[in-house]
Image 1 (cartoon, rainbow, N blue to C red):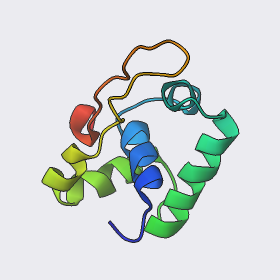
Image 2: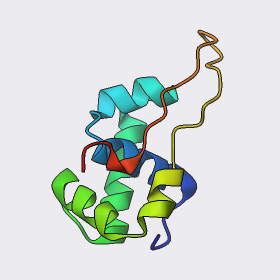
Image 3: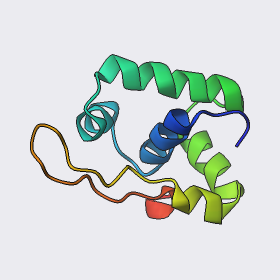
Length: 92
């Protein structure tokens, strides 16, 4: 999808699903600023300005590809719990 890295696509999917930067940071165990940086890179690469445009862009692309992009269902090193399964179609 237009030269997005796997991580950028993962974050874009979560953002389009309605998660806040803070929620994404907690899910992926990264800093909120890191989420913000990745989302801004996605916006630049896709030539969009906000999450509404991101959602519309993702919905317009290959739905099968987008639905396969999920938060890795691996146990968290801190809690041992698995992360939720999230697809781009959750709220778009």
